[in-house]
Length: 329
Ligand SMILES: [Zn+2]
Ligand SMILES: [Zn+2]
Image (cartoon, rainbow, N blue to C red; front, side, top):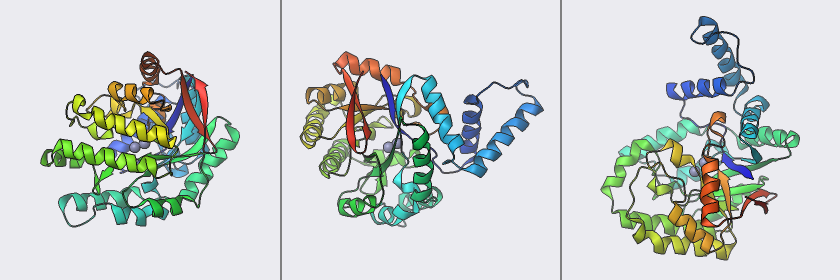
């Protein structure tokens, strides 16, 4: 059985590339192929109409959410979990402003610009849209992807406690305030000792596990995103430490295919070696495409299932009302 428990409805910044990618998603998820021939004026006019409706209705409209669910059902997905990043929501902006590097350094200025471009919605708009969809689609759970910052957990817990979710994903995307998965700041990897960086990363992941805030921790080895990674033999001790923390805290993780189809490293999270260690410790996993557009939902989840089975997993989990529910793979 397949689930997709980590996909997003929209992500800025709003570049021309974003606009083009949105057009592509609209085109490839339309219900019935159009009778007009491609590359004709009529075809372009039709795309413009769809795009203009999408922009007017926004990403929390029933129409946009339904595209993910319909496409996912075609891919054979039985249960869905929708999230968006907390940094999209104004209610959480002070939390990010406190913990992200936003000073006058080149990375600080770039991140300030990025945060202002992406942090534009209210979480209430998101929840209204997705909870409404969940009333019609019983197999949809509502979650959020929260960034974990060291020493930010009390504040984060208080903010999150004001809203209702089926699950909260904990993610480490920032180290010392630096968003390491932003392609524009990847040069920063070259200025650091990789062993120290990985140690810092996994220490932070373990603190996120132990915070008690999250049902599952996303993409455990996301730091490899641009291919900067020490040999895995040297990371095995960290893999064990993370797996042991997850098992002791009763927190799950995921097989996330996002890096495999969208980033230079072209490998799922966790790596097969890491997943073997998780399995040995009995850590449950869910499945995630980390799609940011409806046509990406479910991408490479068949490969993820094959990998999980080959390692020994016979079950996956999904979440409702903060409870893990087991399913045969
Ligand atoms: Zn993430
Ligand atoms: Zn994500």
